[in-house]
Image 1 (cartoon, rainbow, N blue to C red):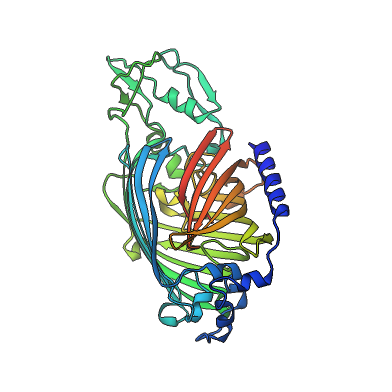
Image 2 (spheres, rainbow, N blue to C red):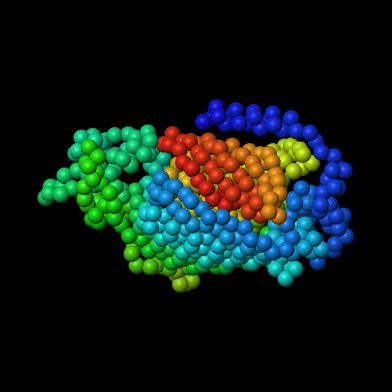
Length: 500
């Protein structure tokens, strides 16, 4: 995989050097060239830093007025099978006479999503984002999410989750000696093997790393900008309703004898059940694993320094954030904990060509998160707290963190994550009155977990390289297809938006 990435980077470099620079005169022949002169004549109601102004290429290709983007989606997930659904995005950009046209990706956006997988997983969401609402320094965001997943993942907690996958070898039809598995698919095939029960019938471990998750989330955020739009002061409120079920003692979804014959088998204790009852979860103050809906009421705040030029697809700038979430009984919550995250992003374009329409951009993220308190909703350990546009980061594993590992593969109260991407935009075109830009993105993700801040050390990192394709649709909609390969196997992901 690393050799493939090296060859791709070399090919990108050769492609860049082979391009012929277009002239300023050619830029002036663009159908929207008048925008470059109009923007300096428009007066903003308050100062916005020149660093926040969109690039000339983005200004020339930005779509005016109201428009809709979106696609049906067909996915295959190694955990959940085939899925069907889609996203529909509604944008209002207003016109080139609006002074904010040159500083924001949109005046407002509404994102709707519905997805159903063959295993029964359902996700429905709607998100609203309104920068500079009513031409003021305020920004409003709101989210509503419904989520049900019969195969939510749990691979253990703490530093021990970094260990190789191990389980009793059942290939002989009984529980054999402990075996280490290099590939997650081989590990899961072994879990699905049924062994005879003492009183007849069969037992299996198909759902050993799974549980049933139901979640309803409502989030409201207000933000005020200062320092010409570079300093963002954010606060909000979140309501989270969660319920969980354990598979222990239930008939497993599937189970097989070593020769491949399907049989009906009862699920033995899952890892969540084992660690909940052996004191592991008490050590981490975890609570809330119940089939009864429980309420997490949270206040959220963040301080952000942001010089990116275009939030959905930046070509330059930095993003620095401290975010904090707080839940306590006096807020009506069933839980009591704090969670914070520190992150930094750096985006730099090394080279532009074809009159700035194509570019080679480095993007990097480093994040550190920690959760603590006397009674923690255990699902809150699944993501780093973030009030950025992309939301929290699911840790560690899956499509938005360590893309080469299964979601939530590495889990602990303290988490470190680094994502490195080289985003190459190689071609753009217009079709059906829409603007599209195509690119490829080699990347490398790595991170680790610790059991507390005092345990932080620069050892035992887990990482994986990958390659992705990108399609920028009218600038504000980014289609993302990623493939990553780790020591435990490879995974494909399709989604909307950069992961950061």
